[in-house]
Length: 66
Image (cartoon, rainbow, N blue to C red; front, top):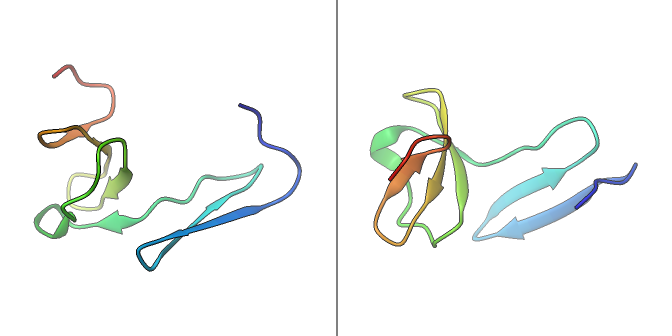
């Protein structure tokens, strides 16, 4: 997948995510406020300052083994 020189706005559950050539903006939550989420969803954990992805069982930090 390649990003083009324009912006794509995706809105899911009242959270706006913008894909652009300069940045990827993902929803940000404190650890205690992480949503239930759906498998494959990506969020930024502002408490631990890490990017997390939802598996079928839990939120895991990107780059770690399960």
